[in-house]
Image (cartoon, rainbow, N blue to C red; front, side, top):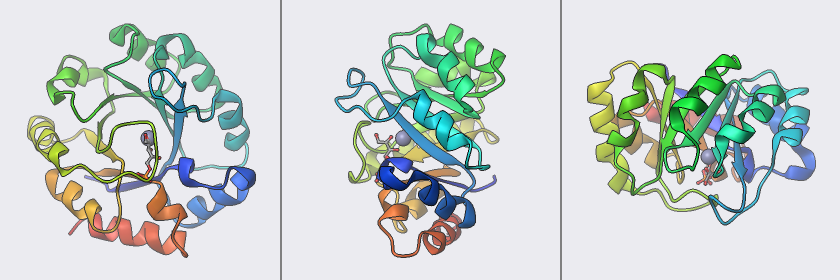
Length: 215
Ligand code: DX5
Ligand code: ZN
């Protein structure tokens, strides 16, 4: 499987988004991870479609939009128009999952489903044939800078056995050490916020994450 690194802009300097995006594109990031929080599905509020549309104008790396919102069906069009390439939403949301996947795919984007740490991986199984990626959260969604939950690894192993070719993403607490654990379990797409943006050399960190994911 291709290893992909997706820096989470949640940990970047929101006053300098163009420069922060350039650090990722110059540094060899494969995707840009954009965390959308509605203050309802998760306690926090982050950015929405207008900010993502503005970022899209100054960055050529594909946008990986992570919707931590209660009604992704209602808002999907806004994120398709904003320039999302992949749209991930949660199995625990209030929307109809099949209808939301259809809206995303019909809008020309790749659809992905996410599970929180306590949600069994079987929750995504009915939808696998229509998904490009599954996101196994390795922290409770809502905040950056939390500690990686190794207890979620059996879900990755089970999914990798079932689907040798699907992209499996991990998000939360990924650093130069935990990337190895998740990689060994079978993940191949790694979101990293604090690890990239709090490092002195984001490009070097992206390269090291990629190298360590294969160890
Ligand atoms: C958490 C977000 C993550 C977050 C990861 O709810 O989905 O994408 O930005 O941040 P780090 O890598 O700092 O744990
Ligand atoms: Zn995320």
